[in-house]
Image 1 (tube, rainbow, N blue to C red):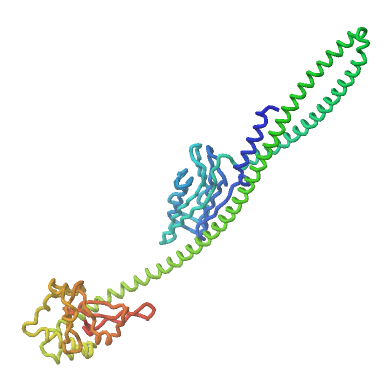
Image 2 (spheres, one colour; image 1 turned 90 degrees about the vertical axis):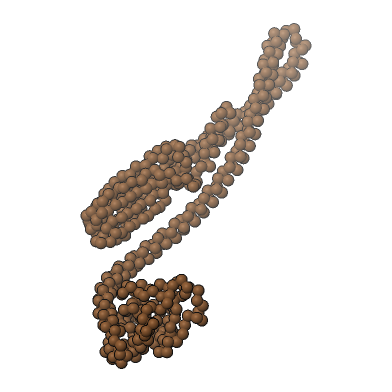
Length: 467
């Protein structure tokens, strides 16, 4: 057998290094189902470079939906590189249901210039269910891109095994031929010895048997030539046999290395399966959390609607109270202010507020305190401090006004401090939510209820709380 004949099985065995494990080229199904929409993808498990493949998309509406859009993107990833093989809508602005939506086939091609890698299928689904706009996004590993498919590698492996068996049979036949030639050579050597003996015996009869001797001599020379040729052939076969033994040893080593690599890849495949299961569990958990947050959002929308109506009603009540307070503040009699405040349900704190208002309206004090701008009527905007009050220290900002309250100056950032007595009276603690507002030309502070503490307190009937 020529040397090129031995290279064919060797090349076939080298191709086995590309074979990880034998897997049939079958198709797989992937299902996306949120209870309202069901979408099934049918796709191949592997793609060969330079070929095209199809992905079947079957969508079914389980309930009535509107404005359904399904976008499919097929990407080839090789290391950091990403190649978009297909991107487009398979369902565009569909409304109806329940029932089938589409049974479409998406085609994509992997050219021979693309690298080997993995194919990722991404989906983006949007539809309206009543007044809600729902979105489903998903991506999964679809297939692997290779130069040679598993079926082709399996065929090459089978052919290589057949060629190895044939070569082993040829080697056995060559061994038997060598044994036969050795036996023949031994016979020839025996014949040569016999002829030599006969030659010595026939020398006395040389004259009579000269012709026979010449014939035998020619035969002897022919046998010698054949012996030399056989010896040369034996040496060549011995060298080929040694080369085949060395090649067999190398192939056995390569086979052992491939077996180890196959075991490592199987372990890696098992680890990837575990990670895939963990990612699926995480996806399910995130979907449940999304549904819970969506339900909480709907409850918050309903609460905002009810609070908006209550806020408008309280605004109208505040305007009436503001008008009543403005009329009361125009009175100069302190006792009449106290009676009006009690009639409005403000109690002793309202009387204190009226006395403070009277004191501030004395001659020379009718204007707003220096450095503080008067609030714009009913707007609720905080007063604006003058520039010269921005650097006043905390010890210079406060002084008792003689009626249980405290006179302060607005510091930088338009900040003031709620007096301790007022905070204790209103039951305000650190971290409690409070509401600031304007009644006439005064600011009021109202404590708000925390979530879970019941309904918020009613609107004040007058400036019973101030800071």
